[in-house]
Image 1 (cartoon, rainbow, N blue to C red):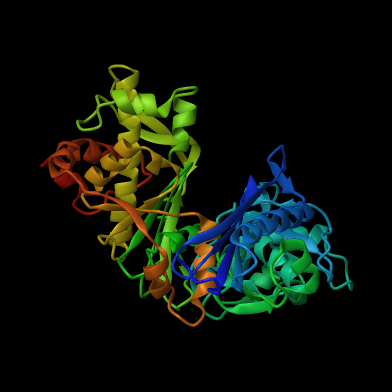
Image 2: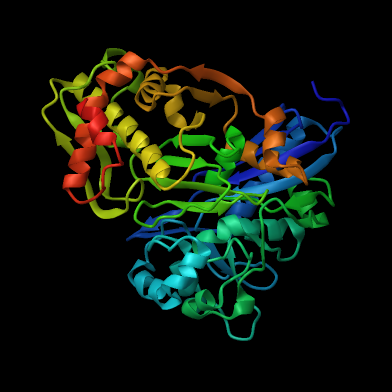
Length: 492
């Protein structure tokens, strides 16, 4: 139980569907939570939201979290995470000049490759990540052409730095985590000249940059009235929602990993050196302590269940599926077209090898297929020099299925740890609490493990052949080379 005078640390997570806020004590106790919905507009490949609606929702969620925690606690700091790649144009007073272009808005995709090539491959080697057409880089260039007004001091902002600016009452620096997909150099915390020239925007329109975890301002009087946060509360530069989930998991020491299995599969770990490989879809964020957080985001994930088994009850399917023996078919469970990680193949599509006996067998094959892709991701990371055989903490909606989590432990052949609170907003509260202390030390006292799932070696051995069959099929299609030893182990 925290002392009455113990400080609160507030984290804010701005997602696609809503805003969530968490007020936590330094021992990990959550004292208050709040949320507010968001809405957007989708049409013809476009996806927009109103930035003023973000600000309204942030105010409502924060007021609920701080109010629930009680007024007797000081607030030590606040940090914000948001969707990676969402951008907008605003004037110097942080008034939006139009709707924000969301992370999956596709209107700039046709120009992306030409813009990326214009910046030059040497620039992207320096940045450590060559942008994909869906990244924010091309959307910022589009906004620069269409929204900025010459000589008016207008700004191009990411979702997170727009909101930290509103909290501060004046523009703040953008953290290099949210800005990575815009072409920012995380080592220098600067915009490379070729990136700015390729975008065709005035350098002054882009935000200053800072590493995550650094103070960027303090809550102004107007924001205090709007959010319930005390005036003067330090504002800490945040990280993307994926990095926030990694912070919440506590997988912050080299060799540790967080595997988030939600609609898609996202792996992030910690490393002493930067790991990047465009062919595998792997890139690294710079961590608050100067290390690197390599990882990637697959297009495979639990979202395949909604399309492959519409209307089905996952819990009921779990109960009848045999997950301890190879299914009659091998499934590559990809929804739509295009894979990003563990290989980059825009032409990739899902497939089925063999014929399932029935719906329960097809369901088992699908869950096994996702687990096989997860294993391939780890083997790909290991092949790139990452310490990929360390402890794994699992988060995301799929951990609600105990049987699927057990299957994943069996396929990976290692224990899986399930944190008690994996919300990105909690990860931002942890970052706000870190200050000059390495985040892994703060996580050691704030992150609690709810369960540990041990692998069953006999089940893993039975599934080796099916895994090798999937890896061979992916390689035959020219999408992915098999990690060294994967097929040979499967054949044995």
